Length: 232
Image (cartoon, rainbow, N blue to C red):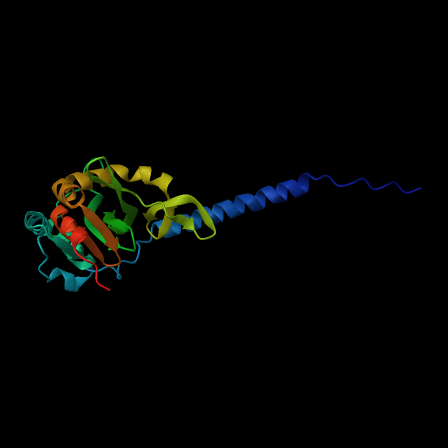
């Protein structure tokens, strides 16, 4: 009488499944690294490219001071901000990697309700970009409106609303938790432009970010606008 065949062990199936999971993880990691080392496309940003170098940028600090003194509003285009950053940025990358890493430029991309602040570096001769999405929040306090700049926190993907996105490493959009790797450099950048940030977000009363432009209103201008009759 023939022997009854023994059922096959499930170990082979589990091993195959584990191998497939490892291969998928390795492929995803390789794809992520590929997109991280590719600098993001900046050609859509106002003030980017050779033609911007010949333009004479507005003095952002002087214009804001004048608007505050005169009780006016001021509008800066994306190109004007980036041309001014290109002329004034003097920060340099220091530390142990000073000979291999340099901070080349900073750009700002203005979207509907938020801004993307992009830093461009050279790492061992190769271009490398990282960015952070920021928004302006204005909250009414007991006696005044308080303006705060915070992480934008939009959905990471339309099919994956959480975790919130934080910025880009190269061309890869990363969740907010990854920003801990670049926060120190952005704090240094903010310190470099401390006076301009104070004028824009503390001295100005209303701040709006729209595609391609930043709108700042002084307290006096906001007060006048509030009492003017609306026309239709």
